[in-house]
Image (cartoon, rainbow, N blue to C red):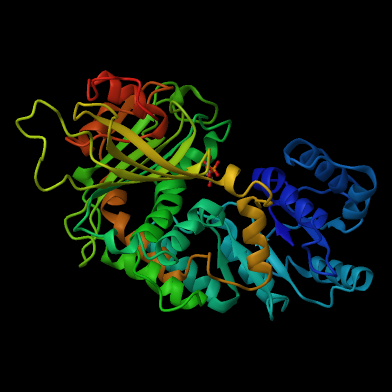
Length: 482
Ligand code: BG6
């Protein structure tokens, strides 16, 4: 049951994801999808709209017979959530669906509406008793700040038990993000150096080339810190920073992600940059004097034995130079420069980069002696590429994977209430006292203030590295391996 069935998320992600899962025979044996929104619409109109969206946004395309079979499981029930007992028509609708599809009253609700509707939806569902044994998914952001997140959790818990609640963050559905756990905890090699003794700092970049794409009203209300930083970047950071869980039981895993957030010091607004791209204020539905950020960067400090003194630098923004999401761990310099006095230079510090997207994979970059009589160093890399190494493997889209997990009731990749609240606690100072907006040109890597934030270190991006290294004259022969 999708609430917010005429919204952007349903069109772009949910319907294509359900369709692909259907094509892969991954949906339960008996199933039906009911869309719901305020707009009056017949089942036929909903199916027609769904076909258009799936045709536009699904990689699979809509094939005749298979599509017709999928479409025969779709129906629509117009609802407004604000009135008491508003869900009565839904009860009757679902009874008919159960009769037709044999779905036996097992309910899976997805709230793809603006977050302001979540509490009402939960209460309306409860009023008509549809909450019993149901599962419910909430899209991010969950709340606007600490107080509203606490209140929302409390209101939802008046109806749903935490075990029924799935707070989704699609970054945790990305293979490359999940692989952080396997990379760290299924290999003997990396975990021993994954700490303050060997790592100088950690960087996480989630850069987007697109601007706000007509979502002015949403962005004005949300801003980049709520949309991206409090969610995707924080969750990714917890996977990098967490301690090994005692098992992969969902609760034990989530205990560790929460612990990582608890160890993260509440942010210092003087270490936060809020940027806005030039031209944002001219976008539709944006205030001409808007101070909403489309870019943010911050330094976070994790205070525990593993990470004390290792800053985590996070940055994310719209209308940047490229679409790229990466995590880089830069290692400390060697304690003693063996090349000192020889006229040769040590290269840059070695690092490990996890490419979340695109070109999913992992790079380890280090210095190596170039063949020849001189003691010159060149930069070399060891690469793992998903596309090459798992070429035969079907990679599910993040939403597909998370829908499957939630339908199966596995909470591992969903955010627990204490994690949501702690994330807001960390961000509270910046919510209360946001630093002033600085502007940046579209198609750049954001405002210069973000470079100052990380200085004397620099932001790393795989694609930029060669050019930067060569320009800085780091190597005598520029033609080194990537
Ligand atoms: C969404 C944000 O959660 O993530 C969008 O609301 C953003 O603003 C999107 O564009 C980015 O996701 P991805 O998977 O394309 O990196």
